[in-house]
Every structure is written in structure tokens, then in C-alpha cells.
Image (tube, rainbow, N blue to C red; front, side, top):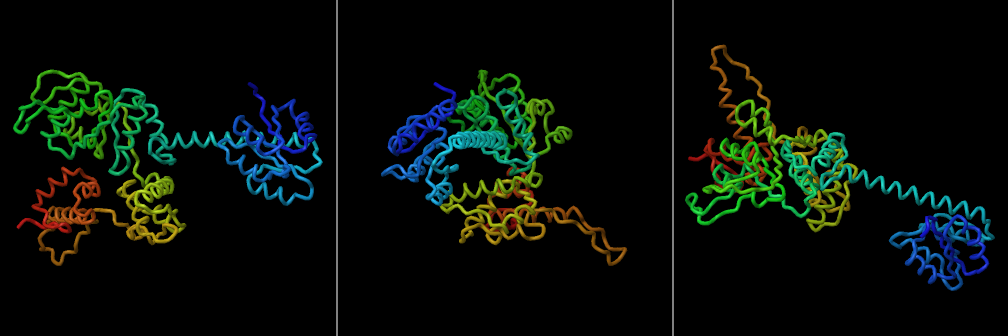
Amino acid sequence: MTDLATVLIVDDEKHTRDGLRLALEDDFDCYVASNAAEAMEHLKNDQVDVMLTDLRLGEDDGMKLLEQALAMPKPPVCIMMTAYGSVDTAVEAMRRGAYHFVTKPLNLDEVELLVKYALRSRHLEHENKALKQQVDQKFSIEGILGKADALKPILETIQQVAPTRATVLIEGESGTGKELVARAVHNLSGRPKAKIVTVHCAALSPQILESELFGHEKGSFTGAQERRIGRFELADGGTLFLDEIGEIDASTQVKLLRVLGEQTIERVGGSKPIKIDVRVIAATNKDLAKMVEEGKFREDLYWRLRVVAIHMPPLRSRKADIPLLAEHFLKELSASNGKAFKPLSEDALPPLMNYDWPGNVRELRAAIEHGIVMSNSSRVMAKHLPAYLSQPGGLGLRVPTLVAPKSSSPNDPPLNSALDIHEMEKQLIIEALERSGNNRSAAAELLNMSRRSLQRKLKDMGMVRRHRKRLKPTE
């Protein structure tokens, strides 16, 4: 074994090979080859840092050898040797990837210096590549992409907290990537084979949620025809991700608090404590601290969940990441839609950068997919993106500004503002349902509320599903 850099000298003239080897062997580990076949044997079997080869190798073509060398998994830096009359050919070799060329008769000092420059260039190239990989790893963790300042401390926190057992509370608006953060913490936790089990708390009634979390025994309630294993048991040895934790009722909060403190559960209808080893990660789009102040969420549970808090910033505060995210979605969604990859045109970026993205990264993903589907050209242009991106105010669901009407008479009755606000809320819900094709989960995300809350409002407003495109009041 040697720490010297290796140089492969390829020339069909023996005196040239020997002269170069004698000139370079004090500083480099030298191999020699008289033809392309011998050179390829060295390239396949030895680590070659620099290849010094003649353009003319008897019956062999030095240009072809150059192409084969550069196609190797770890290609050497290639320096071509040529006679004065073949300088144009040597320049062509540089266009194909050669580092440089020297003309014969050779100046051995010049050759030695050129080899050293070539090695220095190779070292800098490897160093830059390593640095780029470090940057990419630092700012792209487990599918979370971004280099904006708002995201950097989050990625650092994920790396710091992942190997521990601490509970994590992820806060942020809908569509900001809270579940991605949960999966990143789990995947970096040192338990690569363990499960991560997800529970969407808002999608389940309190009775069903309790059974989902803790399981139940046969006959514990009407319809319990067999024992059911809960999500805590399924996640044993891994991670339980509780999404929309702010939606759980008071009774479930008490039981969850006990589980976090004792790491034991009891199935519904059972009396035997079951020991578990589960790391809990929770997420919410609500202000849990405010809910604690209002008495809607237990303070002791809040602090149990919030050992480490991660707040996901909205996309409007990390717009520097939009080009990076857009490129990622272009590649991902082109493939899933059976389309060839199409980059963004120059006119497509301004609408993406100027829009406020109330639906955050999820909305950006949908907009990019729209552009891919609608584009019939070689690029995704502004005209292929959803039209609302270029409209003043966009199409984000926003509560209209109330303007007090002018009174025609001082004796006019006062405006019933409560009734007007109720009607506005109803219209916003109808608009969200129409935009989402009556998908209530998607409509709830547009309205920044849970699906359960939307269901309750629909019931309070007397609105029922009549057909796919419209909801009408109950007659």
C-alpha cells in the first residue's frame, strides 16, 4: 500500500514510457501500458488518479481510450500527449473531458507540473462534491426540502432530538409538512426497523378514538365481537404519531396523560396493565397554549407532549424554498402522471413567488401537478398553472372585510352582524366544498379546521349532501 498518487503512462513508444516513469516515480506511483488493452486492465484493477496517454497508440485510438477512461465509475484525470501537427485533435479531446494536453517532444518538468496541477484540481473537485453533499444532507432531511433561514433551525432540532426518547409537539398551519417532520424524527431515531403508527385524532369520535388508541376486549361494548389491539400496542418499540391532537376530548386527554407518565395502557373493558415502549409525537394546527388558558386542553398533558416543540413555518415565510420545492414536485409528479419531466419556464416563477399560499406546501404541490397535467409544451409555463395564482388576492379562502353600510335614516334598525357573519361562514364552507369536489377532508384543510369541526358546522347549519357539486339547506 502507498499514499502516493497513481499515474498511468500509456504510450506505444518504450523510450517515452520509460522516460516519463523515471521522471515521475519519485513523487508518484507509476504504471505503464503500451496499448489501450493494457491501459484498460490497469483502469479496471487499480486506482488510477491521473492517466497520461498519447493520442496515437499504434493501431489503437487514444481518443477512444479517453472516452472509456472517463466512463469508469472513478475516472482518472486525463492528460493527452500529441505531436505538433495534432493540436486540433488534442483540443477536441479537451472538449470531450481531457484535463489538458502536452506536445511532443516532451518537457519533463512541464509534464510533472501539469500532473501536480491535475491532482490538485481533482482534490478540489472531490472536496467541493463532499461539501455539497454535506449541505444537501443538512438542508434536506428525510423528504423535508428547504434552505430558507426559517427552516434551518427546524432541521437542526430534528437531528438533535431524533436519537432521544423525548416527546415532540409539532405545531403549524395545515399543509406545512408536520407529518413529514414526525417521520423524519422517527427515521433518524436509531430504530430503523420499528414502526411509526399514525392516528388522525380529528377523524374519529371520542368513543372510537379511545378504542383505536388503547384497543378493547371482546364484549366490552355493543359491537365489540372480538379483542382489538390498539395503536399504542401496534407501535410498541417504535413511534405513535398523534395528528390533530387538539381535537381529543377531556376523557381521552386524561388517559393519554397516564400512558405518557407510566408507559402502560389498559384496553377498553380490560383491567390488566400492558407495558409498552412507545415514543409519542403529536401535531396540531391549533394554538394549544391558548386552549390551555381557555380550559379546553389539560395543562399537564400539554407539558408532557411539549418536551420539544417544533413550529413549522408557513410557506409564505420561506418563499426562498419555492423554486427548490417546485423542482422536486416537477420531478416527482411528472413520473407519477406518466409525463416526461418538464422544467419551469422563466415566466412561471413570478406567480409562484408572489402568491401567499394559504394551503402552504400542499397547495404548492397541487399547483405544480396542475401545471404538469395542463402543459403540452417542453416546459411548464405560467399559463399552465392555476389561473388564481395570477389574480389579485388569489383564490385562497379568506373572510371578506366587513364594511358598515350607510344608513338611509337614523331610525333604521341596527345591522344584525351575527346573522351576517353566520351567512359568510356558510358561504365560505360552500365554496370550500365546491373547490374540493365535496371532499370534506380537503375542504376542512382549505378552511384550516378539522374534519370533525366541519361536520359539526354542517350539521348546525342544516346542510346535507344533495349531489356532488352542491350542498343545500335541509327543507
